[in-house]
Length: 188
Image (cartoon, rainbow, N blue to C red; front, side):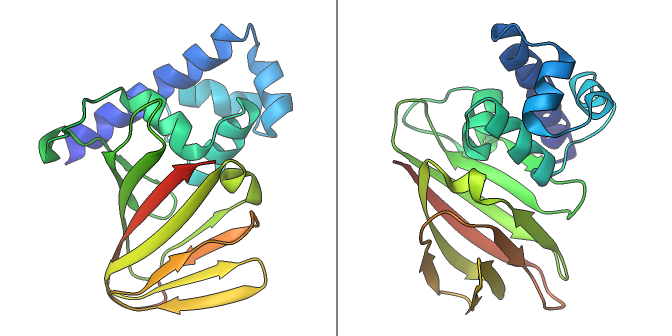
């Protein structure tokens, strides 16, 4: 899995550079639009640092993309059939969560993502990451706490949550065991 994670990080760095260049933006332009330091963006583009999910959300938002949209562009297109061995994997260096793009294509309204959230890990995502999508989370294994705005949801294996209107969200694994969940995204 480490080589697939390394490959995904390299593809992501390339994609950020391509998205910025295609808009004719400098590093400073992207920094201003995303709120991410110019030096950080430069290190990400050169592959010297791995961006966190929070930083990726800010960069994706500057490009008028969702996090899933940016990652999908970086990971490349697949046909209708995506073999398990061909599903891109990305690891968030801050929380350690592992994201597997099970299915996603440009032009197809649905994406499937599998996430493994380590014990004790938390991921905070701003409302902007949900601006153009509808999302459902299904817990496959373990327990997951989702704080959606002021609402707290405790989910166990088999539980499913459909998200409400866009707001800040925290995914938290408050247990001593890893949690695996599936996210279904539909573009709105």
